[in-house]
Image (cartoon, rainbow, N blue to C red; front, side, top):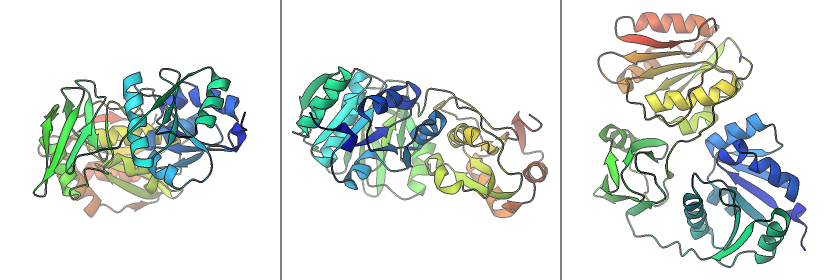
Length: 343
């Protein structure tokens, strides 16, 4: 037997917290440190009240910075997608001990720490599977596996379309990105992605499905005055922007507004969302009191959002006053679809 108290546990995704897996495994393994990888995982972790250290990094990046024994904890939307995720991470690292709670399995990838894997199996009663991940990838081609047809597909936090097959294949060529198969593309999504420069398709953050299935928990209202953070179609960058000086968020885009509303609900930070009605329903809705969402009547949310960020003062003594003035600026061009002022 080895002391699991010497290990670092890296938890990926919100579902491991929402389903109670993280709490149970922390109780069984008593790791010396628990790191949280991912944006929505951080929200779920903060709501859980567990003693963890949050990071916005992907698991492979987190593991590269560790020394000593460690394991990955994940709950995939299906056992197959969970296995595929572990295979992907292992392919970028080499050996990996992966605890997959969707099917109570401990994977020991690429001849990883077998002794640790066996000890986790002993303590949890999970099954042990030794597996290999070659990490082989074709240059300029990316496969996003484990998709469910009909669910949203993301690259770097931006929805680029809807899956039509279990595997989506993307190709990068001639300074552009195209869907090869398995995707009903969302042209505006590709446009948004490329506007931020063509990503390295091999290292880009790719996923499919909802970013969290549980609703957010309401937190106490944040400060009334301060800085208004601007999040333009990049909801995954939110935690980098919402410091203690932030009194509200200007969110641009349907999905970005939904993600910001969900995360900021727990933080008690109201959101002013600018949308144009092309939401992909990637997260359970939730907004802090004081939030307002407006739908653009003519044009696109991109243009109106950029205009607001340019013409509105992003420092204010009163969030409510800032919202009132912003609505006056937009009068006749938008309709209010959510208004939680006075809530």
